[in-house]
Length: 155
Image (cartoon, rainbow, N blue to C red; front, side, top):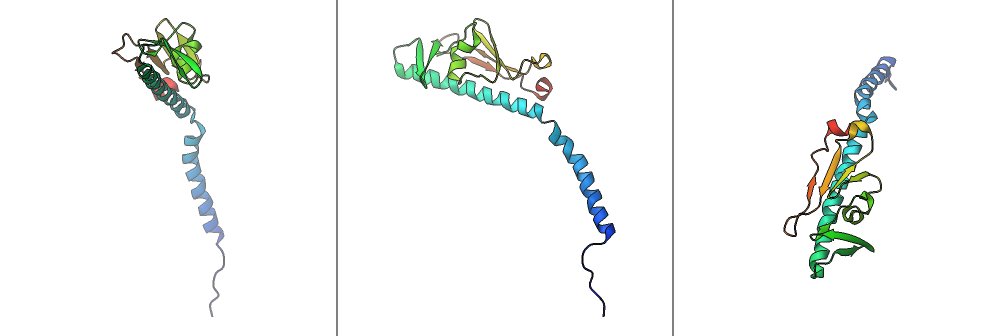
């Protein structure tokens, strides 16, 4: 009578270990540097917040019906220009920053009419940004530019 083999031979175990080693050597680098993807996702989140905040503030403006200079969203007064959130030189107190929830995790800079949002303040990532330009009149919405959110800019 033949006896049945129980367990694995040493060669089979070594081959499994070698195959797992090769797979992990190929897959691990993909998991180590996800910072660019994370930064791009963070910027996409701020883009969504800006678009939503602008639309919600404009909706509140239209509902008010008397062309108010500010609306209240979630207990915060949001200053408006031409029916949309404004931008002022103090970036954090711009209407769009307030309407978008403060954007505390971002680096904000502003001129009189343009707010620039960056994921961080690293010199090599200055182009990884979104710009919000306030509305020129009541019939033209603000311009939100997100072309800077690329892997090359956010790396």
